[in-house]
Image (tube, rainbow, N blue to C red; front, side, top):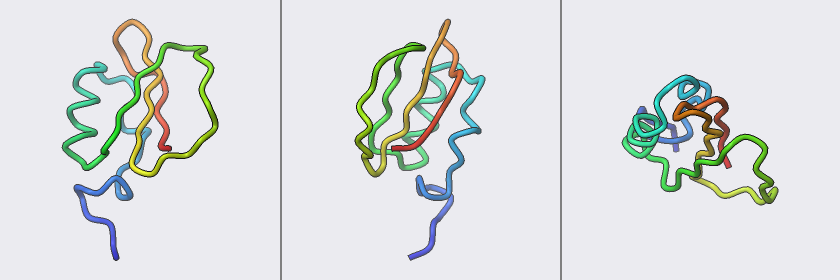
Length: 69
């Protein structure tokens, strides 16, 4: 199976850095991410990997870091 433009596998998390958090979430869901998690800097997270999840570190309403899993 190949990745399509609306598939999370074809999406680069780095493209969300700098976006408004709400806009980043809307774009991520439109591109097929099934879970979007937003956390403030320094939040302790588990290391479990969840297919289809996009994580955003958000500060002052902007995405500062983004990664899958």
